[in-house]
Image 1 (cartoon, rainbow, N blue to C red):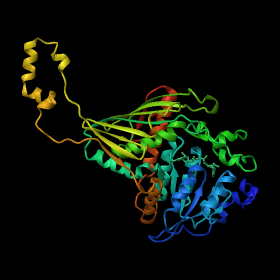
Image 2: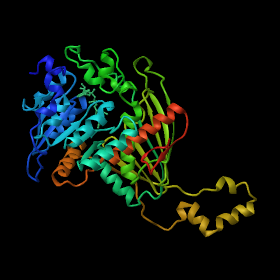
Image 3: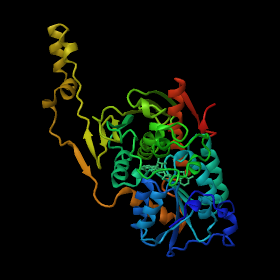
Length: 441
Ligand SMILES: NC(=O)c1ccc[n+]([C@@H]2O[C@H](COP(=O)([O-])OP(=O)(O)OC[C@H]3O[C@@H](n4cnc5c(N)ncnc54)[C@H](O)[C@@H]3O)[C@@H](O)[C@H]2O)c1
C-alpha cells in the first residue's frame, strides 16, 4: 500500500517524474496488442469507467492516481491488485509503457490533464465536460493537432443503441421538419443535487487538498468542496457543465448540428442555498443555425419529468427519448375551422363543408381508407453505453481512425454549457463565433 508521504505527493519522485521515463517514443499499439491504461483520478465515475474497461478484452489498467486514499485502494482492489498507485499524475505520463490515459478528475483539472497527456504521447479518454472554460477548447484542439493523438470525450449516451437508432430515424426524415427540441434533467433529492456523503475516514491524512485544488484559487481544506465540487464555481460549471453537456452532445448527434448561434438563459438558486454557489434551477434557449431551437431546463426541486428526457418535435412526428429507450409518436393533427366557420352565415357554412378539399382535410371520416403509423416504442437491451463507448475508443486506438466523440465534439458541447452560464450570469444574449470556435467577445 502507498505511504502517506508518497500519497500526499511530497515524495521527491513527484517533481522529477520525467526523470523516471523509459527512454524512446511511446510504443505503437498494434491491432492485436494489449492496450495499457493509466487512470488520472479514480473517483466515483472512474470506478464505473474501470468496470467498463474491464469488460473490454485486450486492455489492462496498470496505474491509478487520485487525491483521496480510499478511492485509490478500492480501485486497486477492482483491478485484482494489478494496478500500481502513483502519487502524482505525471508519473503516469512519464511511463512510456502506458498507451492510454483516462481523465476523470474534477472539471477544473481536465484541460491540464488532457493537454499534458497528449503531449506525453498518450491517447486520452476524458470525461465530460472536456473544458472548464470555452477558451480551453481551442488549446486542446491545437494540442490534438500538434500531437496527432486521439481524444474521446465521455458523454457515452451517443454510443447507446437508443441514440444510434433515434438518430437514424430523425435523419431518415420520419419526423418531418424538426424545429423544436425540449430536454430536461430534474431531480428532487440531496444526492441528485450533488450533496454526496463524505467518507468518514476523510481527513488531511487521506485527502490531498493541494492536489485537488491545482489551478483553482487557494483556500483552506474544505471536505465539502473536495467531495461535492460540482456545487462550486471554482471547480465546476454546475448544472450546465454537469448535466446540460450530456443533453447538448446528444442533440448535436441526433440532429447533425454543430453549435447554437445564440443562447439566452436564466439561473436561480432557490432551494439548496447552504451548499453551493451555483444555481439549482436553469432554463436556457439555444438557437441553432440548422433551423431549430432547443429548450433546456433543470430543476433540483421536482422530478416530474424523467432524468435526461428529450422531446424532438417534428411536423410529421415526435420522438421522446429517455429511460432506456425512445418512442415515436406520429403527428395526427387535422385541420378544424369549425369555430370560425360557424360564425359565418348558414349558407356560407354549408357551402364551406360541401367543398371536397375541406371534406378531405377537415372531416377524417370522409377520407379514403389508409393505413397510418401508430405510436412505436423501442427499448434498449444489451451492453451498457459506457462499455460500448470504450469499445469504440479502443478500436480507434488500435486503428487510429477518428474517435466517435472527438475533442471538437466535446469542446462544442462543453461550450454550449459555458454559453448558458455566461448568459445566465450576465442576463444577456450570448453568441457563438464559428470562425474562432469560441464565444463571441
Ligand atoms: N459520463 C458520465 O455519465 C459521468 C458521470 C459522472 C461524472 N462524470 C464526470 O467525471 C468526472 C469526475 O466526476 P466524479 O463524479 O467521479 O467526481 P469525484 O469527486 O467522485 O471524483 C473526482 C476524483 O478526482 C480526484 N482528484 C482531484 N484532483 C485530482 C488530481 N489533481 N489528480 C488526480 N486525482 C484528482 C479526487 O480525489 C476524486 O476522487 C467529472 O468531470 C464529471 O463530470 C461523468
